[in-house]
Length: 135
Image (spheres, rainbow, N blue to C red):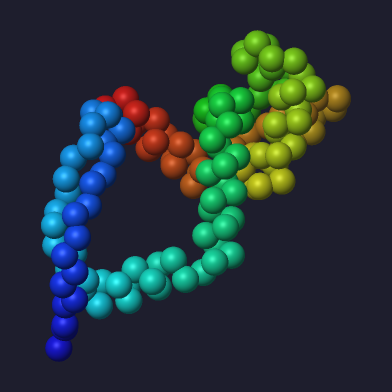
């Protein structure tokens, strides 16, 4: 048997696109089954922290530009730096951070080092976020 807890409150939420405050509801209804299912989704603290670190990395514009540049491409540091109008040492430093988080990988060919996305999960996620911003 599912029991619901009723708590009377007034909630306001800030709509970032509209930049205005709108009321959401005056009654809070708690469904214990949904709460239990949700707790299972967020119970792995290490995983949540690792995911947060990835979002932090991608939240920096230079690193996000690098990842966007590497989707379906393999580029050397010099090409990335030229495309981003940044210096090689800056791009190299950002690539190291992305590589440590397993977001990008590299391969050597003679004296050249080429970078690419480490796996399709990252590329697919970035593509979906990009599509979302284009809506």
